[in-house]
Image (cartoon, rainbow, N blue to C red; front, side):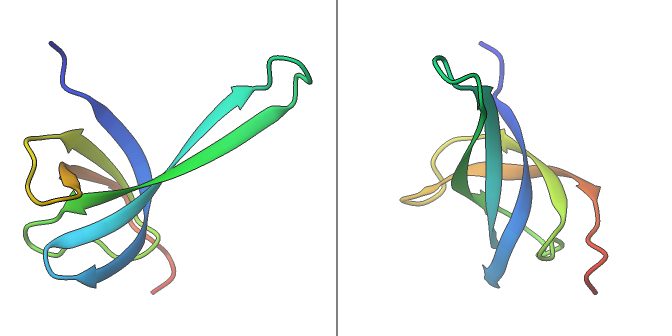
Length: 83
């Protein structure tokens, strides 16, 4: 069974070893043919606290690490230019 991966943008890094990311899913509406954007937030385990707000990261599904945390940081794709 393949491992699930997602690309998202960090929206919060206030917790220790945890970041919150936003993943956007774009699809065409079945009736109106308009592009609809659905966003979902995930808690991601960041062991050495290297992510900052605005970074684009690749995450991978893992075993449950806490009540809501089931994703781990795999790679930082691009750093934020907000700093």
